[in-house]
Length: 309
Image 1 (cartoon, rainbow, N blue to C red):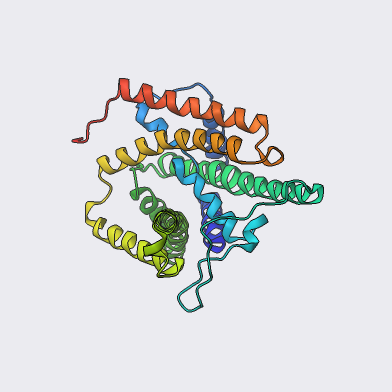
Image 2: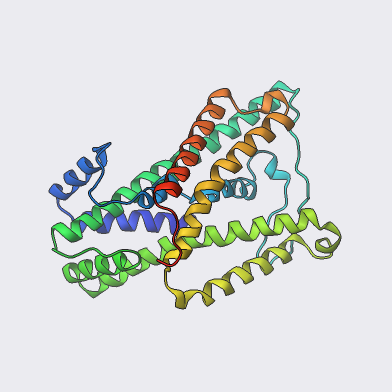
């Protein structure tokens, strides 16, 4: 995952810099800084994906799986999902509580939280949320302004940029860009498959211990992962139908504030006071939840869903 993330970000950045011009860079920067400027013809639905950056609604919460797998904090005592070539590790149905009455343990807990904040800011906000989106915007604008191409939507954007790069630098560059796009898509898609598989496995493993307990956690994880991959293969002929995007985007918009508020309630109710989130963390999450709920209501009223489009 780290390798794919680095290849995707560094590769797209280098390729875009090679094909763009200083004028395009400044135009894109000015466009990004034009806060409050609404492009002509834009729909309310087009705003949604930007509100759900970088992971897509409640998918942001799958970051906790990454924290656990990396062994951060009490996650160091948790079993991990190993590959099929290795022995499965024992994964408990309940977690571990830090000794919140020990000042030294609280200090270490806060250090882990700071490290987690750094990873969120660097990977989610700066690289995934801002930088990658800016470079993609610059690449699309360059294709239209410098090379006079009509930039399409969806996966065709990558094909257009690859063709531009191939014409300028040759067939080897065309193939190189294909590798960059493959790494970018794998990094995004694998996190989706992995997150959903873990979420379903957690549900079965926790709610049905007698049945699920007959097999290790890893078994159910790969069963879920295999089902998702099979579903993805079967959906390839559908392309990118509007109704699937519409359902996913609306669910992402509504479930993120719901889960956020639920987690705030659970943290306040079940965690000891020294471990509870700070008031400014709660305030920021509540405020953002209100923004998402407000957008969902406005979207539903002024652009009601029409699945037949």
